[in-house]
Amino acid sequence: MGNEQFFTGWVKLRKYCEVSGETPSGVHAKRRAGHFIDGVHTKVADDGNLYVHIGAVQKWVSEGMKGSCQQA
Image 1 (tube, one colour):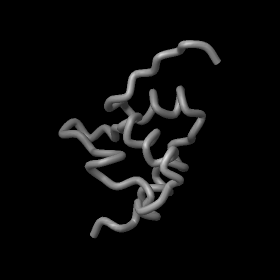
Image 2: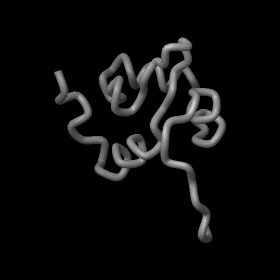
Image 3: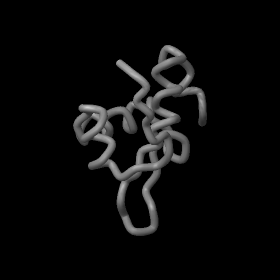
Image 4: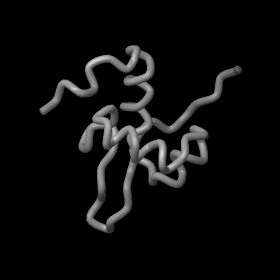
């Protein structure tokens, strides 16, 4: 890997899946399990589209995926 730079903000689910290799079903499963927290890792916009925050997901991965279920 060289000096690739990636956008780290909100992207539509389709784009997130394209760049990450994750499936939409996988993202929805992580939301249901509480790993992806709505408003932090994902959010449904007013237009009904699901968005994923790439930076928040990268942080979740780099921190060992700990504590994602702690928010209640």
